[in-house]
Amino acid sequence: MIKHTVTFKLKYSKGSEEEGVFLKAATQLKTIPGIKNFECLHQISAKSHFEYALSMNFDSMETYNTYSEHPEHTAFVRKYWAAYVEDFLELDYELM
Amino acid sequence: MIKHTVTFKLKYSKGSEEEGVFLKAATQLKTIPGIKNFECLHQISAKSHFEYALSMNFDSMETYNTYSEHPEHTAFVRKYWAAYVEDFLELDYELM
Image 1 (cartoon, helix red, strand yellow):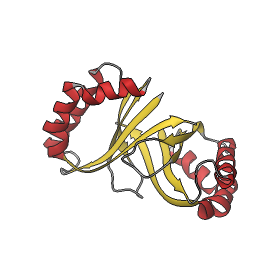
Image 2 (cartoon, rainbow over the protein chains, first blue to last red):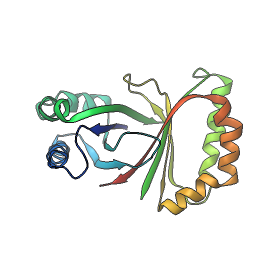
Image 3 (tube, chains in turn orange, purple):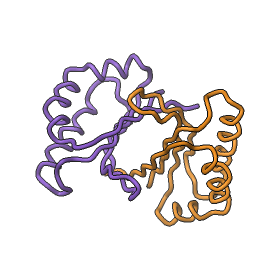
């Protein structure tokens, strides 16, 4: 099982209309086949400037790659991620 | 529920004796009261230089703070974390 996470900061403030538009679009990603346990999170540690995260599980790297290349994912990246996100860090985990 | 995560890179290589000593000590943290779903993880995204992560859940910020100040945690930080870790990032999450 692979846990794919991406933590990020938006160009827009919390409570803004743009935040709402972005998070609504991000939440739609969960309908892409192969995703398990999709979560939309607030990052709350004061030791990091990131403010949000998306987290999802995949059964295999193949399923993960299928998600990455899925038209709904690439359209989201092009239309929303590139326009709304100021900074991000992708972290993927496997149990030891 | 708060998910506390810390991703990190060691000063020592994978498979080294030092890696084994550090990870064994880190795994012992799970016995501290209040921790739920403790996980020791490999970070596998090539987009980040971090190589490991610890992840654990707490029911409340109070429980999280009790863990942070627990003598076994502070001893681990002093004896192992400070000596073995080259770089790290702490990220804490709450469900939206």
